[in-house]
Length: 445
Image (cartoon, rainbow, N blue to C red; front, side, top):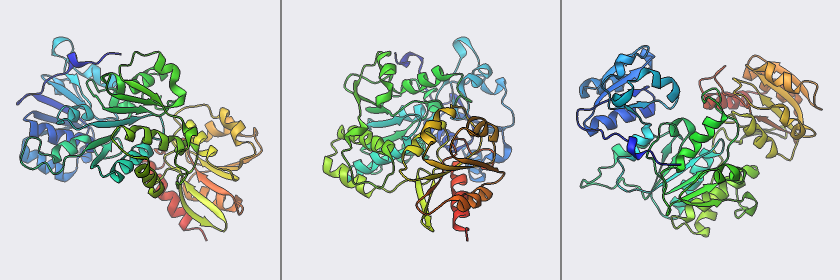
């Protein structure tokens, strides 16, 4: 694996850079590019998708906004293109000039990383557990007394950090000791020179195959995180990826974390997978001088994140758990393994692929009932109906499914919404789905 430094473009004053998508990362990239002196053109398919305050800023700053379908003419003469994480690189390339005039395709994360002034980066990727792990890392580092920027795929673009820090100026109070970054396969596909001081790959399982061409492309995207790391850097891996690591020529030191070590028994996080996330975070933070005592206190004080095996209520002896961030079959496997009590399982949404049948042995004797809602009924019933010692029912709406689950659950059970799907059939995102679940539980008689 080699770094793509030779393909990196230098963006100078007056160079045209096209930003695709007016999401938070796109708007942050546009603001950063403008500050760098570039000529910025922002493309957004949905005319209503550009916030009014950004439109006003763009008008004053001389940043062009073009709405509607993208066209090849919009990319002519561009030095670089910064795509939305949701736009596959393969779909973008046919729109771009080819040959010597081809612009660099550059993730917002890559753009921002090139503007840093030496701040070390701790970056985390993986199919599941990324957000919890980066949050644990930030908590451990802060407990040690270090200042931390936490961002990337977790919500705050790295460009916003760069914009907030006056590098080389008189006032640098906003500078962080460590930048903790969650990074997705979407973002990594457009990273060419991104180099963390510490990087980790927690796990890999089938995911985003509606975006990536195949599993091989998805895996290659994840491993782009390590391509530019040097011998003094540290690459951390979960136990399930030994073969993938061995097949690649990696320069940094490598470490495989072991969840069985269970160094931190005082935690409110459910499940063995979270023990793995804790161990991974500890191994990363040790590189920045975090002591075991600081890490232990951070873990003990750490509250479960919203929508990730989040206990939202106990009603009539039944524990209600919101795991709306469970969007894959593998994440559902992890969720089920977290419980040692009978489960009434709620699933449903836009199915992204995966082997549901493989979950049947785990469900036997553990799942009392499956209550589905929304889309993908044919996938779940096709895999599970009549194949286990649990009942199945399906409902068009989430609140109806919650009411059904309440009627089925007994004292001592857990009702777990772990959909194993994306939320886009009924909700704008997994957060909206999780909030709707909480409201439906609170409305129960």
